[in-house]
Amino acid sequence: MPSSTQAGGRVLVTGGAGFIGTTLARELADSAEQWVVLDNLHPQVHPGSQPPADLPDSVDLRIGDVTSAEDLDAVVADLRPDTVVHLAAETGTAQSLSESTRHGMVNVVGTTQLLDALTRAGHVPGHVVLTSSRAVYGEGVWRNADGSTFQPGLRTHAQLEAGTWDHGDGAAHVPNSVAGTHPNPTNVYGATKLAQEQILAAWTGSHDTRLSVLRLQNVYGPRQSLSNPYTGIVSLFSRLAREGTSIPLYEDGEITRDFVYIDDVVSALVAAISRRPADHVRTVDVGSGVRTTIGDLAREVARYHSAPEPHVTGQYRDGDVRHASCTVEDTVRRLDWEPRWSLRDGVAGLQEWIATQLD
Image 1 (cartoon, one colour):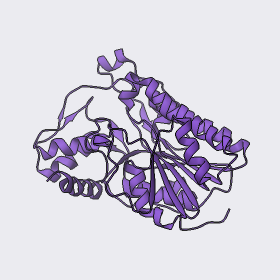
Image 2 (image 1 turned 60 degrees about the horizontal axis):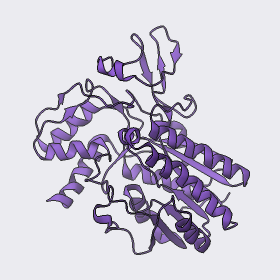
Image 3 (image 1 turned 90 degrees about the vertical axis):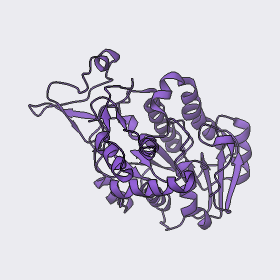
């Protein structure tokens, strides 16, 4: 497949008016023949169902829902996209336990509706790009004290209630990687994201086209919704620290995540879009490659605002994983990409943007 440093052609971006989609459009939309966004402007993400003010003028925004065959047919038949970037998804881990149907409808049925619309239009795009999630790994791989490894399942409610946060006696988590970790989601959200991957792989494989799957770690940065309670802990911690409040830490404060700045995620997407995979499916992890405890994240945010020291609460979320992080060497090699933002610089960048929104 030919490579390009630009989007080129006709591009359809589902959910493209959100956090990632808006930032991606600012990077690539002007280089595309057409950049069409289908987004339902859900009020949980877009207060008042208003589109983001900083979508480039070159973006053709169509208000519609990926669960609606009629909405998708209208866009697909008209555009006949060369590239489909599938961002539309419900993302809240905790919310997926209480609103499982909503997550299943948007993430799973929304994906099948998209494929059916392409089929009805008699059109096969040259490349489909999916933003998946680190949640497909569940707890990933752990290593016992004797060196043997195992892949634990869900931490039970009883285990969490007892404050037994880790798996096994003295076991340690091994950072996730595509090459070494079999997907094993432990919550509804992760299960729906894995279903998206498998559905798209089956369809694109049957139609001899290309699929890129980017499993994103915890994305944060400017344009992240400040009103969505499920948008991520970095923005939540930022709001509390700005108010001079001590940030509460769940479990013992030692939960680990890989926090990756939005600019690094978008540069990975640009690389994936511009370089179609040589094989049918290309699956990569996108993160900073650095595992960070939520305690260390909270202290960094508190330091920026001179807020009180964070405090451990012992609270927990059912369905949450203890540790999640990734290695990025394979992604660096396959996409000719690398993460550039440190946690300190990323936290500062987010705080500066928040100040422009709230001050």
